[in-house]
Image (tube, rainbow, N blue to C red; front, side, top):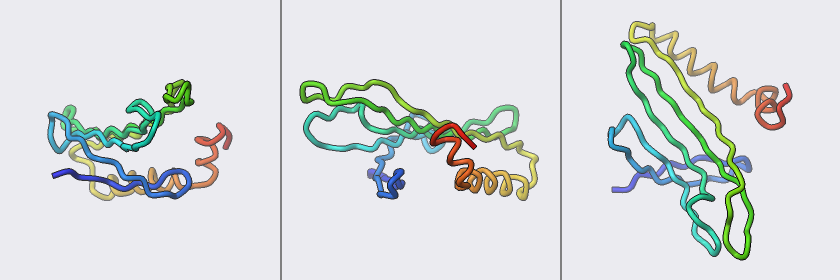
Length: 125
């Protein structure tokens, strides 16, 4: 069974990512946005990696988003570089649920704030 996740891009267009499970099962996965068309190859696709590990009784979830950029050269796409964003958390096992919920809410809402979004768009707050 193939699992997919729909995530909006910068233009609010739904993009479908196929979930490719990693050896550690449900605690790690790679999400691949697969496009089809002339001149395209795997290096041009955005990729999201999700993982979680436990270190000294602390959960450490991480999400890494990588978006390559490049150009068509002689009909084939050639990668010139990539932009990456990493989101991570450290959640001690003994932390109260309210602290975990607030940390997640602040992080989610922080990234939705226009001033913070500006930092990631053009480097200015």
